[in-house]
Every structure is written in C-alpha cells, then in structure tokens.
Amino acid sequence: MAAELHVELVAADRSVWSGEATLVVARTTSGDIGVMPGHQPLLGVLESGPVTIRTSEGSTVVAAVHGGFISFADNKLSMLAEIAELADEIDVQRAERALESAKSAEDGAAERRAEVRLRTVSVR
Amino acid sequence: MGAQLRVYKRRIRAVTATKKITKAMEMIAASRIVKAQRKVAASMPYATELTRAVTAVATGSNTKHALTTEAEAPTRAAILLITSDRGLAGGYSSNAIKQAERLTERLRGEGKEVDAYVVGRKGVAYYGFRERKIADSWTGFTDSPAYADAKRVAAPLIEAIQTETAEGGVDELHIVYTEFVSMMTQNAVDNRMLPLSLEAVEEESGTKGEILPLFDFEPSAEDVLDALLPRYVESRIYNALLQSAASEHAARRRAMKSATDNAGDLIKSLSRLANAARQAEITQEISEIVGGASAMADATAGSDK
Image (tube, rainbow over all chains, first blue to last red; front, side):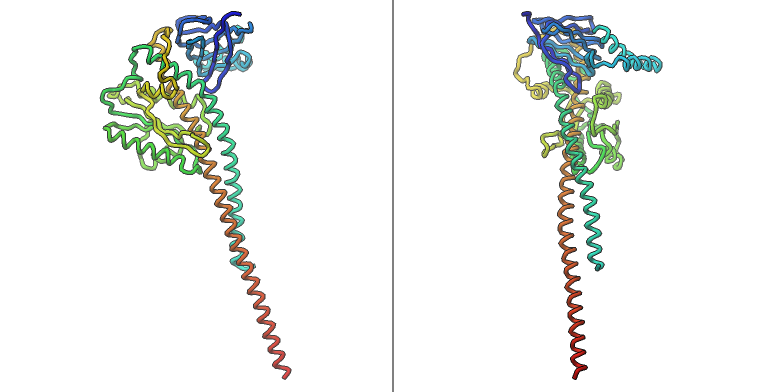
C-alpha cells in the first residue's frame, strides 16, 4: 500500500472534507503544487481554484476553494479557505446564473467565484 | 363582586399574560443557545489551523510585519466592543459596555487615545446617548453572525492598524466581547488582538513548547504573513461574534427564566390576596345577613309582647 497523508479541508464555518489521500494538487500564488506523502513542510497561499485530492481508496475528490492557505507538516496537510465547497455540492445552474448576473453587474469578485465553481465541476 | 377582588383578578390576568410571553422567550433563547454553540464548535477547526499557521510563520521566520511588531510609543488604540441588538438579556450588554469603559480608562491612563468601534444596537445607543464619538459601527447580525459579517467588521480595523498613526491609524487593537463559559457563566473579557503577542497565540492553540517544523514558504514568508494575518484577525473576530451570540442567548434565557419565576410568585401571592378578599367579602355578607336576621327576630319578638 502506498504511503498516505492526512488531509483536512476546512472552511471558516465548517469542516468540508477530511480523510487519507495519496496526492493533493492545489494552486498556489506561484503555481500549481502537488503534495505527496513525505513532502517537506510547506506553507503557501492558495489561489481561488479547484483542488484535487486523490484519496487512498483511489477515488478523486474535487473541491472549489476561494482563497486561503495550504500547510503541510508531519504528513498532515491542512487547507484553510474562507469558502470551500465540494464539487458535488455546487449547484451548476445557480453558478451559471450567478456568473451571468455578475458579468452584467461588473462584480469582479462574484464573477471569479462563479467561474471557479464552474471550473471545479468541469474538472470532475 | 367587590371592587378589591375585581382589581386582584385583573392583575392576575395581566401577570399571567406576561408570564406566557417570557416563558416563550425563554424557550426560544434556549433552543438558540444550542444552535449558537454548534456554530462556535464548527468554526473551531479553521481557527485552530489558522493559529497554528500564524505561530509557524511568526516563529519560523525573522519577518517583521506591521501587525506583529509593537510600536515603541503607542499613542492610539482601537477598541472593538461587541454588544447585542436587542435588550431583555439581563446584564449582558451593560457588562460588556462596563468592561469596555474600564479598558478605555486604563488605556487613557497609559496616555493613548481611544477609538471606539461598536457592534450591536445597544452599544451604539449607549455611546450615542452620551454623545461619544464612534469610529464605526455595525448592527443587525448579533443574533447569528456569519463569516461575511466578521469580514465586514474586520476590514476597517485592519485598514486602521496598517495606517501610520500620524495619519489617523491606530497602534493597538483591543476586542471586548462576552466569553461563553457555560450555560450559566458568561464573562465579559477584553483581549489585545494586535499587535500579536506570540505567547498568547501559543497558549491559545496549545502549541506552547512544541517544536514546529522548518517550513518552506510559498511564495515567501512575507507574502504568507501578509495574507495570513488579516485572515487571522477576521477569524478571531468571527469567533468573538459567535461566542457573544451564544452568551447573549444564554443571558436572555436566564433573564427570561427569572422573569417567568417572578411572574409565577406574583400570581401566587396575588391569588392568595384575592382569596382573602373573597373570603372577607363572604364573611361580611354572612355577618350582615345574621345581623339582619337577628334584628328582624328582635323586632318580631318585641311586637308579640
């Protein structure tokens, strides 16, 4: 069995996902980063975007995070985000509607949030 | 029915109606405490992880940051006071306000100017009535604060602390809120949030003495700290708002419980008085009848002769 790392994905008001994984791919401000078990201690700033977690059972969990941090030490990886949601929780129609209204209202932040959600769903 | 008895009956009816209302408020507050406590618990993982990260950066690098270094001669401090929007919660708001007043006194004594930032209508009313200056205020969410509310509160505070003191910025940031200890105990406390003291952070996260690994910072320690500290402040404010909400509901439940109990006592003593009044009325009627009858008997006995 491959080595595992423990992952905690937490949002400001709840714990979104936690479990064992073999690979986590996230986007930091300086580029995409992949973390496997035994990675050196790391603390980075996350960009808004999809995060891919390959669980030890072989399935893939995709989540949308909107800003936040990734920290890895002692084979424990935690991702903190103000807003984080799993791809399954994202309502595509609602995100599309939000994207439309954000575009017409020229609300940059809301537009980016909606785009991240849609991109996350398409990764899955 | 006698006039006095009627007055008692009316008062009993009024108190019974009040009791029903306070009982309902007590039960609503009780159900909301549980919800508020659950929210506090749900926000804990984020707060702990964030505190760990802050400790890691602050101890693992020699970075100096505006939010961690103490000014040599602090001249201005900001106080964030968290009160409730609604009353009928016993001493909840006034305890927090009193704590803020004490802190203000102390800071003034140390030669610092104090800017007040107030959350909750009760605090705003207190400052407004005394015509004190409020730097900023927020109302309408103390019942169940969301993270977005904490962000809104934090934004001007972070901006103020990052501004130079000469240009109207502040050197220190204190927060006054009501700590939720248990259903029965809530304490108004004040904390210095910024500049960050590492000992306090370590104590809080329980990582004191723990050796932290040497982190690789992505993109750099400064950038990470820059991004981390505002989030840390937001998360602390969020936690304070949630604890205050739980305390507010607990204080309201207790106040309403004693109001209900007092109404019960009042109803009891009023019914005793009403019973006594009714009994006195009956006794009086009987003695009137008896007196009337014996007078009649005396009169007839006299006419027989």
